[in-house]
Amino acid sequence: MFRGVWSCGAVGAAIFLSTLISGSSGASAASDDFMRIGGLSSQPIGHYEFCKRLPQECTIRNRDTTPLKLTRDMWQHLIAVNASVNERIQPLTDKEIYGKEEYWDYPKLFGDCEDYVLQKRRELNRSGISLANLLITVVRKRDGEGHAVLTVRTDGGDFVLDNLTDEVKNWQQTNYTYLKRQAVNYTGRWVSIEAPSNLLVGSVQ
Image 1 (cartoon, helix red, strand yellow):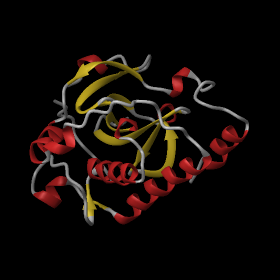
Image 2 (cartoon, one colour):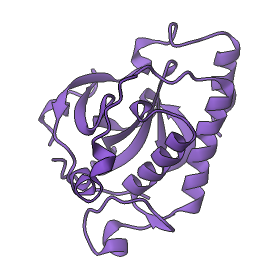
Image 3 (cartoon, rainbow, N blue to C red):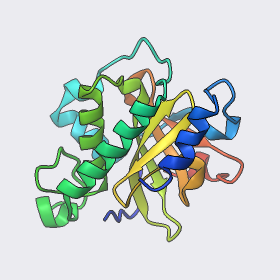
Image 4 (tube, rainbow, N blue to C red):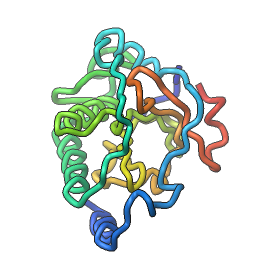
């Protein structure tokens, strides 16, 4: 299980929209725009305990794993939900909120990074986006601290919703080392993320 140290606390839309207007689609997106997935990985301790409390959240099997079609309206929707949750939820550590070092839950007024992820995932799912395309993702920041973001799988690449910025970015445009994320076909399973610059993925627990 991941036991790293956690620290959580509409720019770019014009560029992406110009790509849509020029006719780019998933078929023409660069392969690096999509995360390369490895084998099964250990479940983060916070998610494991979350699943024990809410087992219905972690037993969903997604039969259709087709990536989300990224239209102009969908892009704006992702930006809006990311910014809205970031504005509504105030950052506090799990220790400050729950008196525990690690506790994943849907936030009400305050939350840690993974709580932002859960809320964005729920709101986007309720708007019609499959959970197969809304994946809780564990990363490591440049300072070595653990962090959680939401990966949105689309036919134009894998995009990241982050509580540390209102900008929605392709995963390659961030400064994170990507470790693991939920499997697309099963909400209780986790897989490693591989990349040429991420050689330690297989050994990080």
